[in-house]
Image (cartoon, rainbow, N blue to C red; front, side, top):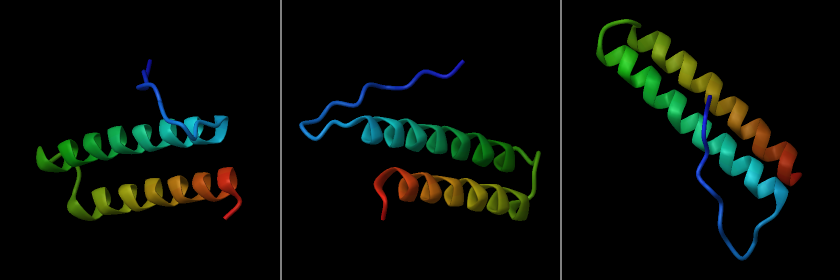
Length: 68
């Protein structure tokens, strides 16, 4: 079960809250991938590929939420 920090700001919108949660999830997953790679559980190439996929998902999320 994941918990998210609260998003506080004068420009609060549901879209910004959702993107903030997506950003936190991205950061958590990148941290896990880096840990796995650092402990020799996955290769650098595999870690890079996974992080690249996560980045793409985050970018897609941002684009769909903010119509960029």
